Length: 112
Length: 115
Image 1 (cartoon, each protein chain N blue to C red):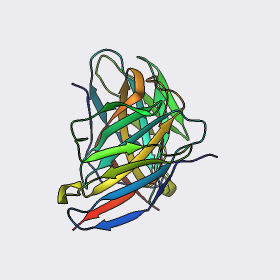
Image 2: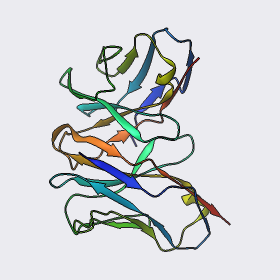
Image 3: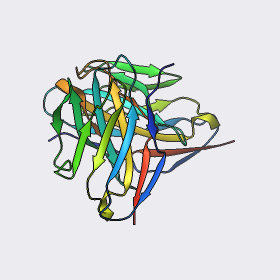
């Protein structure tokens, strides 16, 4: 079946540290992959996406590369800020009607 | 920027009662979804809705659940007789198209507490 596994949190970093949040997936065929972010009190917002193997999604300094050989889509940022503190969700979707499969979310705390 | 809205933000109800969770999707979107997240667990797909009918539903979405688009703007999720295990955050989402490369826009969620 289709599923997403992401690293457990919380992840606590100091400002300007390097961030990696691991995400691996299981799917038949070729899913599209997404990272969503949820700030406190808000809905899930799309952070970036990649729709085929070797694509790199990027936004706001965050990057993730669709690696089919390792079935991974790890989220990275070179220098985190306090404002990046949020919960990050990895997700995949397949076929029509865009049903999403989400990971369990990783909470990121960035300290000044 | 257009956004998906949900009301109420928090709903407390007693076991066995009916609840209706409301969502206003983005106005030009055609595909609508409900997801839920039980505390500490994954965000789970419940149902997708297109052209005034359910296009897919999960095994969670049993006969106690129903969805409706009663007018041109609202999209509702009804739970007929709530159980304790229905306590969760419920997210509504919409997308302009149903293809798998299209992002979904999510609302802020309704926290449902069943006592």
